[in-house]
Image (cartoon, rainbow, N blue to C red):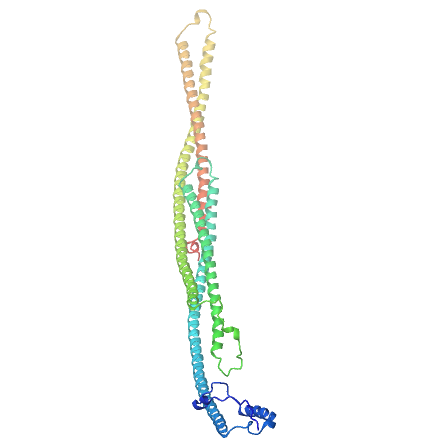
Amino acid sequence: MSEFLVSRPYLDARAVTQHETLRPPVDPETTLKENFLTSSGLASAGYRSAKYTPAEWVVNNEAAFNQAVSDVKNSEKVRHESKVLYTETEVRTLRTQAEGTKHLGERLQDIHFWRSELERHIEKLEAETDLVLAEKRRLEKALDATEIPFAIATDNLTCREKRLGPDLVKDLVEEELLREVELIRSIQALHKRTLDQTVTQIKANRDAKQTLEMDWSDKHQAYGLDNECGHYNNFSIETQHQPSSAKIQDHVSNCEQWMDFTRTNLAAAEREVRASGELRQLIGRVLQDTAEDLRAQCASVDQAFKQRCQELTEAKVQLEIHLSEILQQIGAQERNIVSLQQALYDKEAPMRVAQSRLHHRTHRPNMELCRDAPQLSLVEEVGEITHTMSALTQQLSEARASLAAMEESRMVLEKAIACKTHSLFIDRDKCMSHRVRYPDLVTLSGF
């Protein structure tokens, strides 16, 4: 019987001996099937060539046993490693999650701290802004209060322009009034500049407050989100997969930048608070100093008015005394003129008598027309009467000239008295009575 060589399954005895699988494990059933198909096709060639030997059967069985033992050990190893792995990963995952929760808690504390700081500074800014607004209202009231002194001073100057004659003089009162007007204008300009500075400071305070409020709002929102995240756990039903959330975005800030941003905002707010406090102190000093300056200038003007009214009163009294004397003299002079006129009139009759005697005696005839004692006496009488009348006429002329001069003096005195009376009326009855409405120190200070 012929023998044919038949291919048999490859079996590495070293691998079986060493219990190591160098190739992928071979399925015995698959090998038997392949061998059966091969040997069955050649069955006609003989029964011996298509069968395994007992030794091969033993080796094949040992290989299957060893493979099963190896697979069991490998499975046990894999199960052990898996158990260790998922235990470690569970612990590590829980630890990592706990650390994340801890970090969230620390972050919440940081956010709460900075949010509290922001709230404190927002309240400070709000309180400071309210104080500056109160000072702004004081400035506006003080500025409005200066309109009354300005109106009073300009009205006084306008009224005093109506003084008459020589009383229209640039005296101390006018100088003080002009000084008061200039002082009020400078104070109004100072108040307006301070008011503009106050408005700018209020805007800066509100801008800083708005910045803090926006930062506070962001932190409040972040606090709510982180607080919600801190309450998440493995049993939360609202959690879901977000694969792209683990990517760190390029535009996000780090912790140092986050704190620096808030510190910068707080520092800016603190600067505005200090600036507001300094501005309030400046406003207080400005209002106090300007009010005191106005009241001091008002006192100077009032003192000048009193002094001027006293001078006018004294001058008026002196003029009235002189007018009284002039009137007395005018009366006496008028009586004197009447007496002189009467004396002249009284001399008319003696003159007529003497001249008539002389005229009649000129009609004496011839030698009777002589220069006798009566003739000489009559001539002397006429000369004497003529001289007396001439003296009386001269005296009458002087008396009339004196009366005219006194009349002119009377008119001048009366005009001067009327002028002084008018000036006193303007200064005392109009100006000084108007100055009674001058605001007091409290009103000028803006209260």
